[in-house]
Length: 399
Image (cartoon, rainbow, N blue to C red; front, side, top):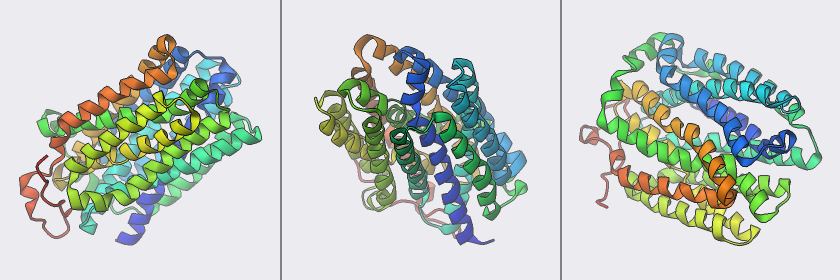
């Protein structure tokens, strides 16, 4: 077992997953224009990707147990790449092929997400120190790269079809190559996954899922709607709207890379509560700032504020290694319901109040995350770490 190689491999699949997602997200305004969609119709089209993810993710624990993380990611990368290419080609044909492509992309990406978090948890436990936020920073590196490349493609006039087919080829080749350095095989993961349904009855696991739901909704709203909102709300050019999205993703990347040091010093709950306030301020600047430069500054604060929610939720679900895989599957599934609810909700509201004002609903989800954030404290039995287990964070400060 080469732990360094496995760590690099986990970084690679996180980066590739983020790159694939942001490549699609960067072309949402172009696809919207090509299909002449209203905000409500666009929300329903985006719903297809969320439906694919939410259908696939409850079964992801079983799939990982059967195939192992490496083979799961290989298969799902190929399915996701096929869906991405189909969505790219379909935007010049009609809505149905785009919906079909996004469903496949969502199903592949959702199961891939669970598998890479399970593998990341295994690597984290072998290292004996927290590293999950940095793996998610790798995802953000991928999203920044995808968003910046997408901005360049838009500025150069490259069609969504050519752009997304190229990205699909990269994913289909690179992901299967990366997973060859993963830690374990099917037998190891079957032991880790156990009964994937048992974790659905655990109150703490479900509360962590609620927190991740709120975090995913807040992050996902930025991913799906920030570019469109700045284009529509501030009459920005498509390239500037996509660049604002890239600023949001860049801020998340920095937050995830440097966040572990803050978590170690102040604990999960205090850190996440401060970041929630930061996200609320950023959201207010985007919606009510009155100018594109102020909205861009708000996008940076919004990105920083949402940086740690999802990865810390995954770490909290993995606090007890024996049950990590089943709990990650549950928490990821509950969290990804946000991607099912978010796009159409924002779209329907945008038809009545405008895209910018529709983003204010996200503030309510941030408040929900604040209410349940105490569930992310490490359980008391984690106070002493055995060799080869994740070293717990310092004792939480009361807050």
